[in-house]
Image 1 (cartoon, rainbow, N blue to C red):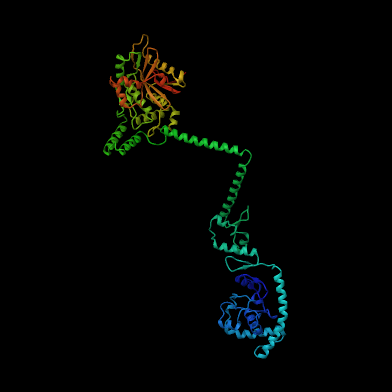
Image 2: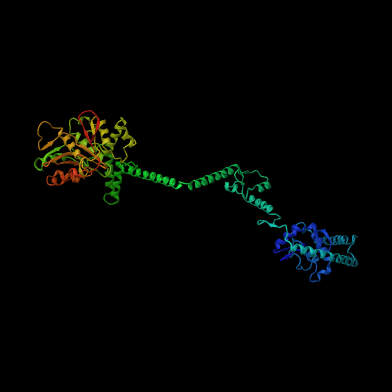
Length: 592
């Protein structure tokens, strides 16, 4: 613990004692603790104590020793003092003004200080040039010192017994010491302002520690004060961002308050339900797009190329063969005609020959006009059944004299060409609702088509057509007996007036049968002795190898089972039939 010899104040640290000496005992107001000498500088006071009170340096409680400021010469230090007693501050006090004194001026100081000392104690002018006069000055100083020590002891006890009213506050960033908390805060704020540039972010510009009103008053710079709080910003843009933060926080608080209001749980549950429903709808829509080929995954040619690339990767196809097949495909697509790789001809002729000699359990068999079978290929697997059924229908129309002149193509068109023909029908204004469903575009897509697209295509060719809807089952176990009766009437319409023979080879085009997810072509109808009916269907999903088994009498009875479909095999909820009519009336029919 360090004790100030001037006032008796105690300090724990050396830096605190230095600060105390600076603020409480300035050099121009220094006072001797042994006599009434005051109003002299630090060096003068030190010289006075060492010269006027030399006898106290010998005792244990002698006069205090004052260490001169750093920077003085060794000679000055030797003449000024000897050993520092415990009652005085232990370290030097740094004053730049007094540090400029040199040792060669000490004698002049001795004369001035001695004169002031004697004048303050006796009121007369005195010097210390002779030993007798110096002893006299010492005696006078001792006399005065006794009274001063008594008064000083009382004052010291009073200050030590009572709490000091004024406290000192040191700056944590520099040696500056302030006598109030407010001054220290403003001083530290100035430090912070110097450390941060004016071009900082809005958060830094609006920091309360940097831009408080008190700091701005000291700096004299123009700032912008927030109307909602005490923060002051450095520019208008920072103020705007700061105010927006206020508004956002207020909105968040209001939302939180609304969230805890009565009925908020119900509103939250409904909102979450709506979000889940919307998300589910988006996912279902994407699935439908992918299912119906509208997801932008490419069309027939792109799917064929990917299939051949996979075959090359598995080692089933060589690179040379790949490029050869790709060139053939591109040539076929450029011509607009089907390459015939998936086509099987002579199916109806083989069936006619079989029913003439076999199948004695059938009392009547109706067959459509000659129709070729087209199966799906690697380029349209999973979505091309509608196009393959159109190819079957067009192959039959080419054999019918009434319709052959109406066909644009002299051969069966390829799938990309069929897509182009349907788009041309849409451009003529046919089926605008269906056209909008496909966004007026089929080429380059894997879009599924149905009875309405075939209707638009045939109509654009000048061929009248009708769509018949069987929208619900009409028999037990979700069966459709009315559909079978309607097909029987369709084939019977080609003959009238007399009893039909066992085999009726008609000139009627095949019927297009559509249900959810797939379509097939009806090329015949069987009626057994018990009156039951069975449809004969050509399915695009059947591979060409299975269809070609119908061309052999040895394998035809077994292969015919794949074509024969009794009512128990048609249990979809809804079916559509598309038929060609002889009249020019365009209509649709719904049964029942």
